[in-house]
Length: 135
Image (cartoon, rainbow, N blue to C red; front, top):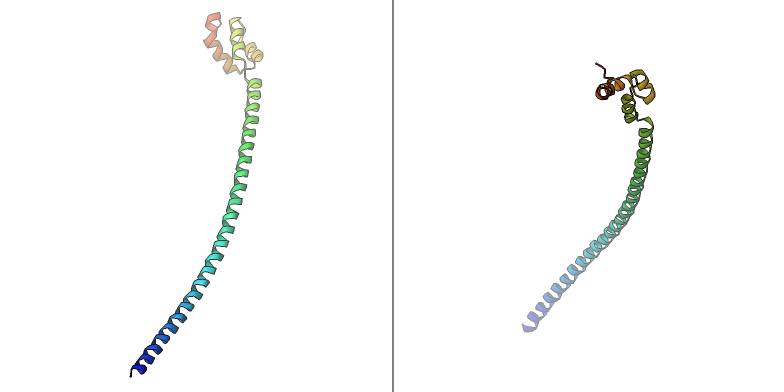
């Protein structure tokens, strides 16, 4: 009886070990598959990150180029504005001097390049000093 019980116990132990080995083998296969999928996902993500970094660098270069161009345009606009302002600005100081010398309104607008309304206003403001104020 002892040897039969021992053989049955041994057979049960062998079956249990065989089942455990099969289960562990299947588990290993699933883990290998999962590991391979994760490695492929990691590679895809690394490629995506590389692409995003390259795109970010290109966007940064474009942004810097646009900023440089904007500064250039601002400089040109400022230069143009200063040229236009200095060329087109009527000389009010010259008009005031002319008023003090007694110039008439018609001559004032033609000489100083100002409108009749501007000449009239300047005459009202500064004409009293020379006695030529418009009432």
